[in-house]
Image (cartoon, rainbow, N blue to C red; front, side):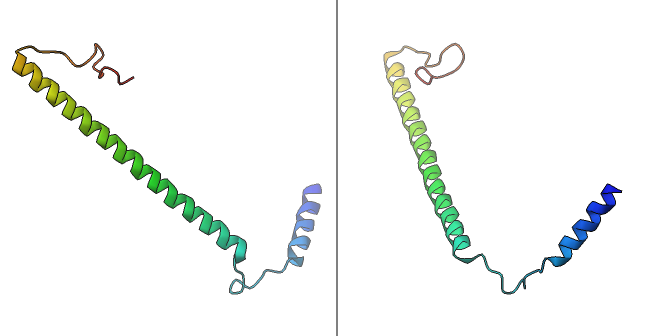
Length: 94
């Protein structure tokens, strides 16, 4: 009984609401500002990501060059040096 009254009240309230014309409804200035801010934040995040990836690549190149120089120096001296720790990680990489 109560459920029937609630559904009846819901249909009466729903009939009073008029729907706007979808051709005339726009997000307005607030929608433009929010969309613009999301676009700006996205561009800034992409720039930061590119910078961080580039930094990681440069560090890897420098590490490889240092390892190559160390290997060449050790080969010239006739000695070998293990450049990894027991767990396989580079020294100083923690």
